[in-house]
Length: 187
Image (cartoon, rainbow, N blue to C red; front, top):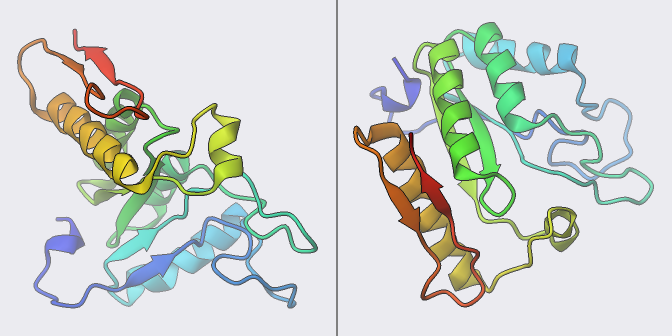
């Protein structure tokens, strides 16, 4: 059972344990290095304490400078698949930037991780904000409202891929001047 649906009104977990520095911009000794043994070591107390979630940060480029904050980051879907075998109680998330991860790929990866985890997978969908990262993918920064419209279309495609029985196609973005249309035909 996915612990996100347990009876606890307050859900607890960790965030950004897949990235160097985690959420702390520091050069202090002992800062998170984003190494696989460290990931496993940090997941164990989450599981044993009965926390509900382990959520990664999606980062494609570090911030540079002395510490290069988040300069070393595990890709979130692959990280989640590996962690699903090591953690046995917590929900394992993968974070998808909608402008950089195609919904067909994300949908397929999510189903695979869900099977590996025994139903403990959850997606974390984000719209992207760090321009140098989006430029790496040739994706422009969209106005905030457009980003959320685009994310809604992205999620619609993912949900249809998970549930549709018949072939279908989707074309979006017609009323969103800066959004790239998503087109897919399921076979």
